[in-house]
Length: 152
Length: 152
Image 1 (tube, chains in turn blue, cyan):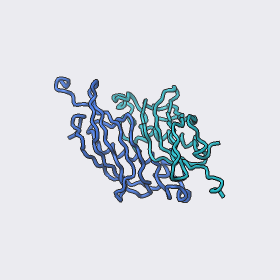
Image 2: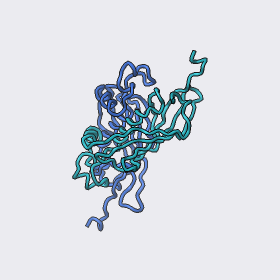
Image 3: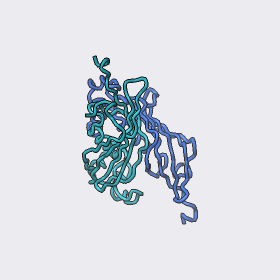
Image 4: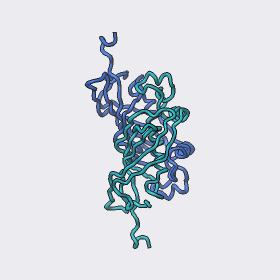
């Protein structure tokens, strides 16, 4: 069972459950955070490079976060990120698409000064056709297992 | 007036309007996309490294997108991003905080094959105390001004 930084191993894989993205959700998110024709208006979206209604990239990012939280890659420790590298939107997410994410531990760096480490998991979101639609590599902070003496 | 890639200049600055982030919004976003104690439960949040309720980083990112859309840095051309580099959360966003973003054009790369260019604007979000809370550098695609012959 994974609980601490020390339990993670390079190459370890994670896979989330599925999440269907509805037309209503796409428009609701976009109305609040990204009110552009791609995400709000079917007809106007046809005339854009996305060639049809698609979720805001930030909506996809938020859905991926939800899926990552549910994966619980650090057990009872929550996800706490300092930032994200290599965030790329690879293909449009359409109404009705079913998204899941897969992750691989690509870097583990133990802190020299604090009882914690930096974990890099490269996450990729896929749609129901197996096409990658989004990828991101957050900088996560995970506590180290307390030593026996510390635990006492 | 800025309308095309050709109208943008290195060092150009943009500043958004203000957006107040409410406790209700923080909890609503977190319930849907980032259901962790930092963002949902005042008492539990006190015990975390964030030392109190704070917006999900993805909520801050979504608010920054909304503010960037309103700035209209490319005039009538929408914001279309391939991805984001250097996304960093610098400080917690608390209930009641008032956020705005400022941006600077840091890179302009004209495509050799398409009538468009890549525009890099480094955006930073600040709270009402002037503290930077979030920064991101999206990869935006902006059309070039049609030449006279093309326009005919």
